[in-house]
Image (tube, rainbow, N blue to C red; front, side, top):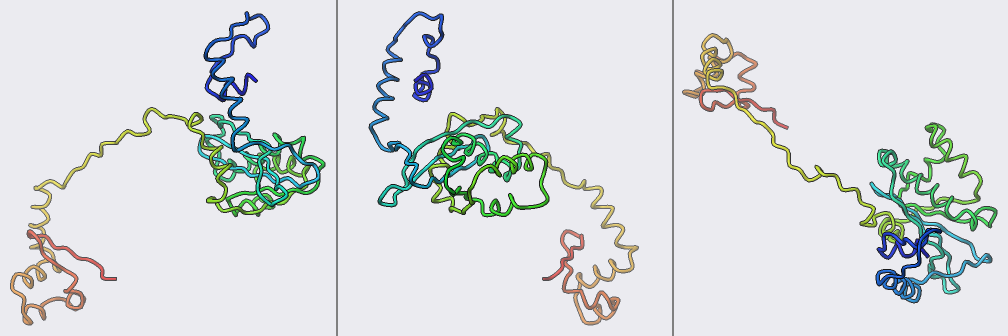
Length: 256
C-alpha cells in the first residue's frame, strides 16, 4: 500500500515505520481514494491465467526502463497483468542503446520471474529488430554474456513490434518523474569566429605578380580574349572556367 501511495504522489508515509504513531492526514486519505479510483478504471489489471500464454513488452529510454506482462483474453485483446518501471542508475545511463534494451529485457524477466520461469513458451516483444540477432552473436561483452546466461533459464522467443505499437512499454520507460534534468542541457554555446586579417589578404594579392600561374589568370580575367587565353598554360586553359576573381583574389571550385 505504501508503494501505491508513493505512485500517487505521497512522498512519505511516516506511519509505515514500526515506531511511528498513527497519523492519517488529509494527504493520506487523498492518496488512498486515488488508489481505489485507479483500481476501478481502465486500464484494469487482469488476474493471470496460467492456461493462457504470457507475452512481455519492454522498452528503454535515456533515463528509464519499463515493461509489462500481458495476456490475450478470449477475444484476442491484449490485457495487462503487471506493469513495472524504474529509473536508470547513473552508470546504466552510459550504456549503449543495445545494452539498455537488453537491460530492460533482463529487468522484465526478473520482475515477472514467478509467472514466466518454468511456464509454457512465451514471447518477448522489442521495437529494435537488431536485438533478435544480438543475443545470438558470438562476439559479446562480459556484461552481455552474464545476461545471456540469465536468459537461458527461460523458454521464450524474441519478436519485433514496431515502435508505434509498443506504446505501453514506451510510456513506462518515459515517465516524466524519472527524467534526469541536466543543469546545462539547454545552454547555448558561444562560438568565437574570426576572419583573415586584411594584411594577409594584401600579401596574397601581392604574391600573384610573381606566380607563374596566377599572374596570367589575373591578366585574362582583367581583359578576357582568345589572345590572352592562348598565353595561359595548357592545364590552365582546360580549367579556366573553374576560376573567378573577386576583390583581387582568385577562387576556384570543382564541378560535380
